[in-house]
Image 1 (tube, one colour):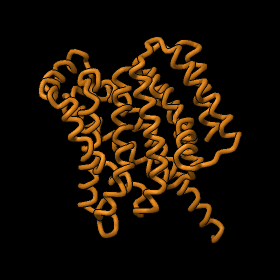
Image 2 (cartoon, one colour):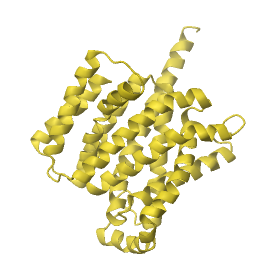
Image 3 (cartoon, helix red, strand yellow):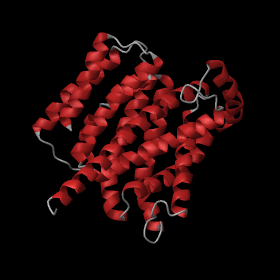
Length: 316
C-alpha cells in the first residue's frame, strides 16, 4: 500500500502537468488565430494590446477578490510594484511588438522568427547579465539563426515590418525571462500571482502610450470594426456571429489564460522541460495557422522552419 501511494501521486502530478501543457497549447493556438483575425478588422496593435492585457488584469483582480486565486500574503506592496516595473515594461513591449508582427505578417512567419528567441537570449545574457555558456550552446545557435534567416528570406509574403516587430518581441521576451528569475526571488511572487502583477503594471504603463500612438483613431476604429467583421464573415470558433466587442473580450481572455497556464506549467516543470514544451508549442501554432489561413509555405521555407525549431529544441 505504501509503495502504491508514491505511484498514485506521480500519476496525479503527470496528469496535472499534461493538462497545463495541453491548455497552454490549445489556448495559445486559438489566441494566435483570433488575434490575426481581430487585427484584420481592427489594425491597431497598441490599443488591442492594452485591451488584452487590461482584460487579464481585471480578471486577476476579480479572482483575488473572490479568493478563487490566493492573493500574495499581505497584498501587493509599494516595493513589489517598483520591482515589477522592468519586467512589466519588457512584457508590454514584447506583446505590442508581437501584435504588430501579426498585423504585418502571417502567424506562421511570426512563429518561425520567434523560434530565434533562444539565440537572442544567449547573446543578451552573455553581454549584459554576465552569464557564461559552453561552446556547445553557441554551436546550437547556428541552426536556429540559419533556419530563421532562410525562413525569412523564403517567406512568400515577406514583410520587413513583421520581421522587425517579431525580433523586437524576441529581444524583450528574452529580457522578460531573464529578469523574471530575479523578480521571483526579490518579491516572493510566483506563478499566477507573478503574472497577475506583471499584467497590472504593464497595463498601467501601456494605457497612456496606446492613447498617444493610436488614441486619435480609436473612435473611428471601433465604429468601423463591426461592419468589417461582418463583411469578412468572421465568426467566433467558426460558428457564432458574436459581434466585435464579444470577439475582442473573448480573445483577450484567451490571451490571459494561455499566459496563466504557461506560468502554471513553469511552476511544475524544470526550465529545460519548459523550454522543450515551448518549442513544441510553436509547431502546434504553425500547423493550426496554416490549416486556418491556408498560408502557402515554400518547401525551402518548411525545411528552414524545421531547422530553426529543431535547433531551438537542441538548445533547450
